[in-house]
Length: 397
Image 1 (cartoon, rainbow, N blue to C red):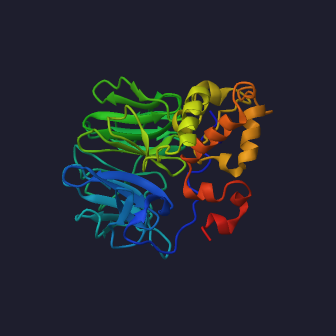
Image 2: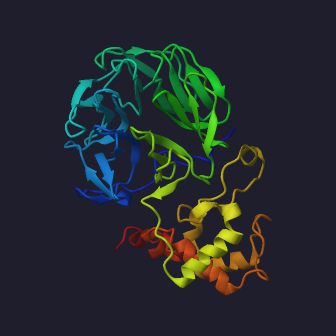
C-alpha cells in the first residue's frame, strides 16, 4: 500500500527558532520528535524536541535539559526512571547514546555505538532487564550492558517507523512499519508479520501492546495472547507517530504526523487536541457548531479532523478523503468568500461534497466558517487567504 498521501512528511516542515524561553507555548517548539512519561509516578510528559528535552504542563513547555541538542530518540528505563536519549548536537553530527539520572537535566555520554557516533532515532529499553537496550542507526543495534557495548542484529522490517521492547519477554520486540506490524522473538534477528495494514507507532505498558494501525486506529492487545481490540478510530486524517502512556495507564498522549499533540484522559476511549481547542463563545460560533455537527461532521470528522483513513479509501484509485478543516490542512488558504462558495455550490472534484444551497443559507455557511475558525491557530487566522503566501505574515511580522 502506498502511503505518500498518508504521511507526507516525517520531518515536520516547521521553521526552527533561534532561541527559546523557559516557558514556551507548545506551538513555539517547532519539531517534536519523541514522547515519554517520567517522574516518580510517570505522570510528567517529556517532549524530545529540536532544542532539547522539555516537560509539558498547562500549555507551557519548560526546558528541562541543560544541554541544547536535537532529541531524536528518547526512552525511559522503567524501574529506575533513568532517561536515555540520542540525536544531534547544535554544532552538527551525532550525540551517540546519552544518559540522564536526574530526570533529563544533565546528560552524559554512555557510548558512541557501532560505527558511531550514532544518532538513534529509535530507542527501546527492556522492562525485563533494563541492561538490554535497542537502538536503530544503520540497522538494529543491541546492547546487553546498558548501552556501553553494541552488536548488530538482523535486518529490520522495511520502512520502520517505531520500535518497542516487550514488558514480559526479554527477547521479544515489536516494530511498527509502513508495511505492517512485526514481532521478533529473538531480539531482532528475525521478524514475523503480525498485521498487514500499515502501523505507524507501537508502545508497551504493563503487559499490553498499544499500536496505531491505519484503518483500525488505536488498538491494544495483551502480550500473553496478542488478540487485538480496537480502542478508538476517529482520528480523521491524523495518524500517531509516537505514543506515551502514563504510569497508571489513564492518560495517553500521541504525536501526529502533522507535529500536533493529542491527549486522552480515559485510557484512549476519547481524544482531544493538546492544548484543547477553544470552545465557541459567540452566538455565531455556537450556531455554526450545530450546523457543522448536523451536516458536515459525518464526512469531515469530529472537530473537523478530516475523514478517518480506511483501507478501502487508501487502496481505491482516485479516492479523495474529506479534508481536515481545523487549520491543519489548506482550508485556511481560502477567503471566507471562497469557502462560502464551496459550501453553497459544492466541489467540482468530488460528488462527496454536494452543493448545500437550498439546504443552508449563506448566513449558515458563514456561521459554520466562524465555528471552524475556533479550531484554527493564530497563524491560520492571521494569514487566511492570500496571507498564506506572505512570509512576513507567517512569521508574525
